[in-house]
Image 1: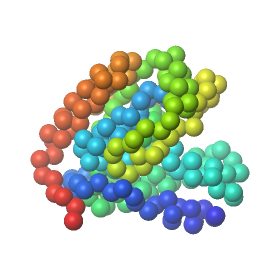
Image 2: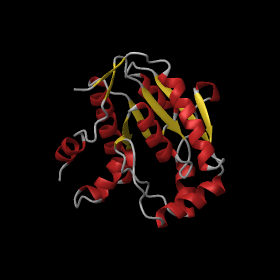
Image 3: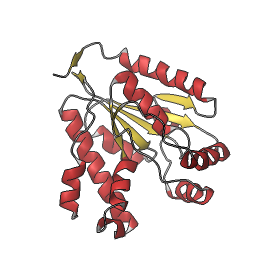
Image 4: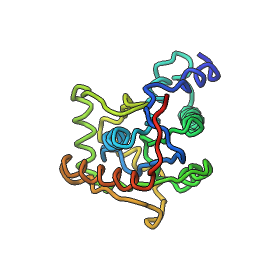
Length: 216
């Protein structure tokens, strides 16, 4: 499949949330692999009826394509970013709000999100590297659980070894100043406590949006 056909296929919206927002917004997560981004994204999606845009979903489709899977890594990343950006624009234009299931850790990308001219809520996931590595190894060996939320709920990271974790940790840019984070979640805590923190954030964001309508 060529790039044009691939983009068209992956820009089709699926599992659309029933909620419209008069003033749409974006929720972005900043955290390392294994810090719980996907679980938190799905929880926020369910609580606030947000469309999940997952970068890993696009990458999985690329690696399953006989033509595109042989592209250089930087071209794969560029294609993933282009599709994600176009999808976000499409979702916002349809009066839906977005949660991004990928690490928004680079100031450059965070500033690009602000170009959509909607509020961007940035959540910092505080985590421990050894705990993250244990999680990425364990989750790869465990069966996929029932998934909640809307949009790309099936996004699954391909990181499943210590070596892959360390490589990505060194390669990714983490240069967002602390003062730009709107919220933080201590992902080192047990899952039950992480979910409490996540739902408190969802409640706080919801309090800013009193006018909501159901999609027809």
